[in-house]
Length: 130
Image 1 (tube, rainbow, N blue to C red):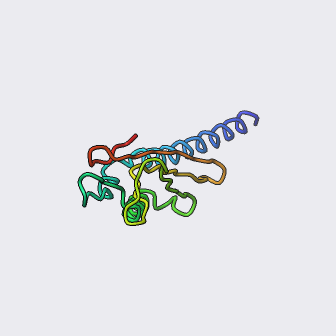
Image 2 (image 1 turned 90 degrees about the horizontal axis):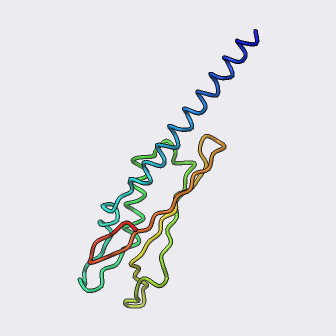
Image 3 (image 1 turned 180 degrees about the horizontal axis):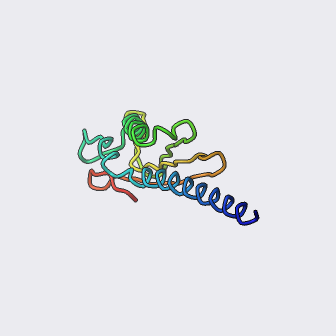
């Protein structure tokens, strides 16, 4: 009888750990896969000497990317953008940023927390992961 109880507990633990590793792996792969191409779409190069990130385009492309790749986790996960105050310039009274940090965070499987930060900046008119 004790063997059956032990085998059942081991099976439940194995299934739980498998579920955790699959979910965590999916989140991490998707966020780490948020590559430079998503941010290259948001580089505004109207004036080639002063390229900057169009923050509305960044938010739209990231939202589309995450919705496409993580639709089943959407209600539980959040992301936020932060611009570096020293990396940018004012143009026509509007702050134009050349550096963006994106933080991706949230709870999944009810008890586990995930958080990761990636930075992107503009170098020679291209968005670079940094």
